[in-house]
Length: 127
Image (cartoon, rainbow, N blue to C red):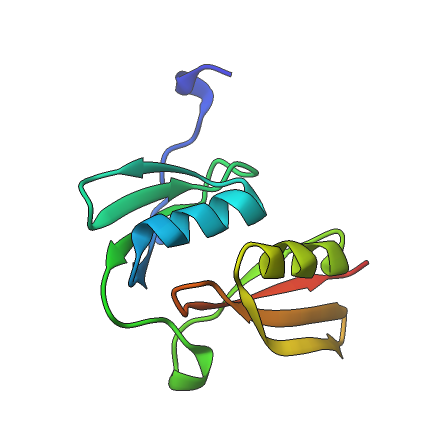
């Protein structure tokens, strides 16, 4: 597909997500191992990521002592998985911790986890 046929950012769409990280190298290793993300470093305190399964989700991690926690009011980013148990195993093997065990909700099941630097995310599945 040529770059001429790819749509650019759309007005009002979410274009880029940024997260804090106490250790960007550790965060990169975690997301690379669990979800296959790729990264570009912009010095020791910032790295940009590309989520390989879609051309529209990109963002970055910046060095900070803070972390993103839904209980504290942060936005919760929720990933989709075709195999919830396998994704949970991958999260734990990569150093993440489950912060909320698998539970059911209308339309599927999900769990919450914290990556090694403390940012909280969730994974859901309709399988």
